[in-house]
Length: 436
Image 1 (tube, one colour):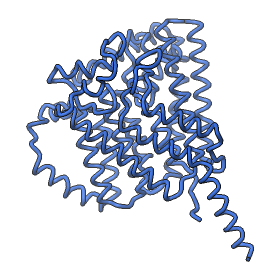
Image 2: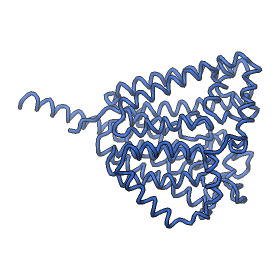
Image 3: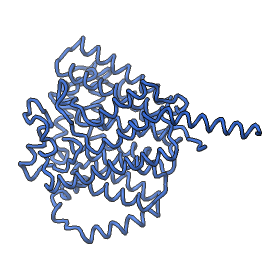
């Protein structure tokens, strides 16, 4: 046997060993993607409704167990993944320091509990990124992940429509949980929203925040397009149009604005998909009874209207409270009020703007660090992501939409979004797998 042939056989054997070793962790990764189809807590277990366990948490702990038992591959790490991991560790360390200082200096109960919950989620999500980065992905595994995301995206979109039109009552989705607001917190909203006609009901099986539902749909779509890698244009068009319809029904204007930006880039870069999309859109337009969603369409029209307090749902008042806190405490402009302190700083409300949220808790130092991290992510994705760069474009769209929501912050309202996004980053920056 020649030397090149022997080397190829050795490499193939090594790859097969790595795939066998990481089978358990890959199964848990697929389960994590599947779990995005149902993100409502499965039981009222834990010290607070904000941390009640979901299927996504079970999948994470399954992956944690798999990795702890050796189901991982250091060889799967790419240089881009490793560089981003170092940056995430720096962010985590600074968040821990900020939280510790806040506990000692301020010690407000609300801030202490919010910060503790946030650090617990950051720990979980940063570990998730590390776990996913150590799972080698060949073509067969990528196809399986594509199917899991198809399932999750389909279920979420269908559930949004079913709850929006009242076919499935929202209260049915949380019937297994306590309904007392003092115990269930915001999860008690599902039962209460059923009593009103003019409120957001397109929440689906995701959570009580319609913005979270909308951006989850967008991220799942971007993940699917990433795994399609520019192929199957008609299926890509179907996914985009179905996701667009569901996003409209969530009634999240920021989510729809981000979606439209992402979809515009996708169709401009994929003329074949644009043609298929137009045909499908014309069929939908011809058959749709638009009167059923007239109020929702009127709401979305305000995206392009003059900025006003009504259109921003009271956000100027919230922003003003946070800015006054910074004005009254000049040192916080530099170092912030401490990780977890946003609701205290904002008189009971988070920032409702990612950049103001970071400024409120981390000051200018925290904001500069976040912007540097965002720039690193964008540069890495632009350099290393595959055809079409859907994760790059969805990151850009979400950063722009974050002027009215705390998209990338570990808040209860955003559930597992940051975890799923970091898993998507790990996939997009993965080391290319040489098929045997």
